[in-house]
Amino acid sequence: MDERDYYEESETLKPANLSCLHCHQTDTYELRWIVRTKKKALGGRADEQDRVRFAKARSYMSRRDDVVQCKNPRCRKRFEISGVQSVVFL
Ligand SMILES: [Zn+2]
Image 1: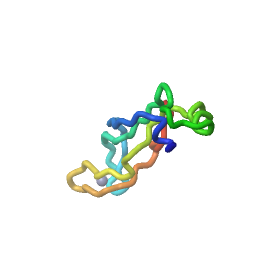
Image 2 (image 1 turned 135 degrees about the vertical axis):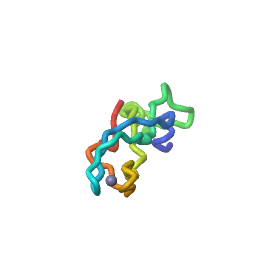
Image 3 (image 1 turned 90 degrees about the horizontal axis):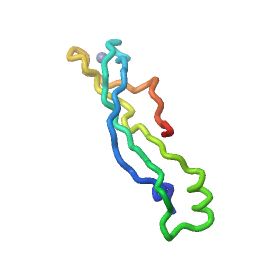
Image 4 (image 1 turned 120 degrees about the horizontal axis):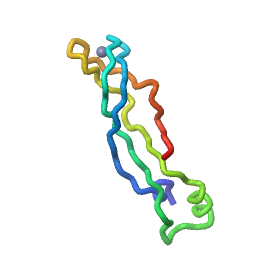
């Protein structure tokens, strides 16, 4: 089984305060996250190894965006997101 079979997948937006690396202006950006919520039970195809891995699995969010475009109209450059975790356990 694939690790993805352990989770229900959905997408969400979360605001983050980021400051542009080029113009240093801080603004709020809506970042996209994939939410993987652990299923209540495994499907029929699960073997012993799946059950062990599933028992250890935890719901988590994974950040989809790595770069954002600066909101400052005089800048508009893309910059890499830093200071925000890429994986958050729920
Ligand atoms: Zn900028």
